[in-house]
Length: 314
Picture 1 (tube, helix red, strand yellow):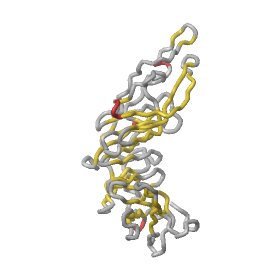
Picture 2 (cartoon, helix red, strand yellow):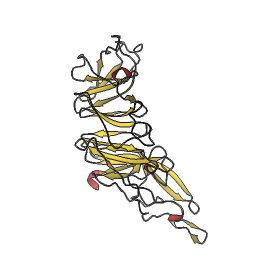
Picture 3 (cartoon, helix red, strand yellow):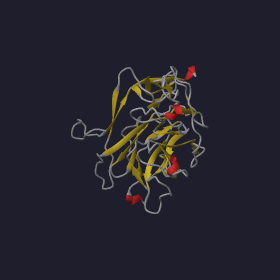
Picture 4 (cartoon, one colour):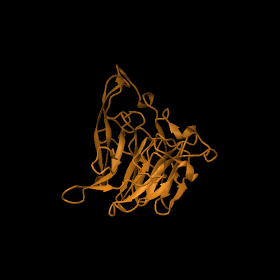
């Protein structure tokens, strides 16, 4: 997204094509707004490499979908504004665009909100048919991320207090494929991880402090960030930002229950692989990982490093 007064052609939306030996810039003419004036103010965009399109949402809650291979063609307009009498676009989290669908957060109109603690809904829009599907497992909260790759999606729900964990630092995951929509598979509200073996020594003087006295076992399938492999076969969830030693488990699902990983060096207090801000490709997942040294009793010296999971080594 560019400033119209800075770029030479005045076009706000541009894409850099890196498929060839030399990267090239593709520029899209500014589309008309409701008053037939050029729309130049956009809040978010994302690229669908599968269908070779880019979607950008304006500050008037209109999503414009451009054809990368035919940049001068008129953009598809998907109106989520007040005039369209639809639940509006909530842009506090980045929307996701893949395989002809957009996964986003709705801000429901009065009377449309599903009962629950969260203030908005997770929804899909088919950009070719302008059909909106609001998930039955809602509401969610706008500070949680979304993931969509292939036919697979991930979001988080906050329908009741039990859907939020660790003082609202993690939420209950909802995953599925397009054939499941508007449904989704929710994590259990009661299944908890068992602590794994650790190399850390929690001795304080002559007294060994059990791990259970330092940490609480955490809920399986709860997290703060999510990612899906491009082929849609694996879902990942983890923490957000600085890694919390207590609840930021790196977890994976292939469509069922999430599982954690043993830390390869055993030097986390939980014995599990702890991390945040997870992303993934077809071959690997990357995240901010936790490394710990013992200090005194339950206290640890923590540092964050870059971690990887290579799928063909699982």
